[in-house]
Image (cartoon, rainbow, N blue to C red; front, side, top):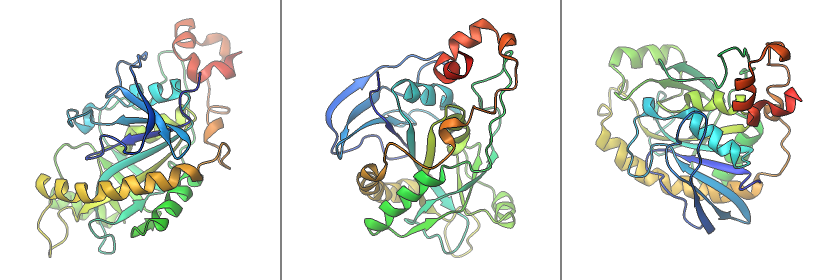
Length: 287
């Protein structure tokens, strides 16, 4: 039974959504362990929304400790078809000032050792990831950000680093040479797992600092990030309220059929245990 069609994964500072009505908290178990926290489902702007704090209430989970597979699987099990990710990021360009909003369209993964696929163990799947963020959902977020008066940048490349430390100056310089726009620690493997789960995924990236490359600014510190996150969170909440009504039942994208040409293993060679465990993701392709 569908509990919610829209999911929101809250990042640093965003641990709840104000204005939710008919709220219930749902404990979800998955084949991949527990998600970051209980999932809060409620009605926002007339639509059912499932909210999950990425780092847990009270910010208990490091970026590299986030159980992305459990989080995405849990939202999928509740019927979620669109995920709006909210995350703090550093700016790698002068024109993206702290407190600006970025809706990225590309990503570079520099994480290490994170579980980045639902598949394996006898099942080979290669999803297309040329457009890591759903362009249609991103358009809705951009329109909502403009409507609330945020200074928003449409498009840009997000480099996801392992963390939890911030960058060295040499790393920051390298990322600027790569023409990176923003830097963060959480969009991967979330984005690719959402694609494997055939869920549209887009990000509201909240700029908090200039990383450590900007000679005219102090190097990024946790205190600096927290101060700017608190201001950005209010903007993110306003964007969410405007975005939810813009998200219709149909989007003109290919996210919902990502697995249709991605499963490489012969159907009769897929282990029975894997078929059962991943029926939520694969069932429609194995019948």
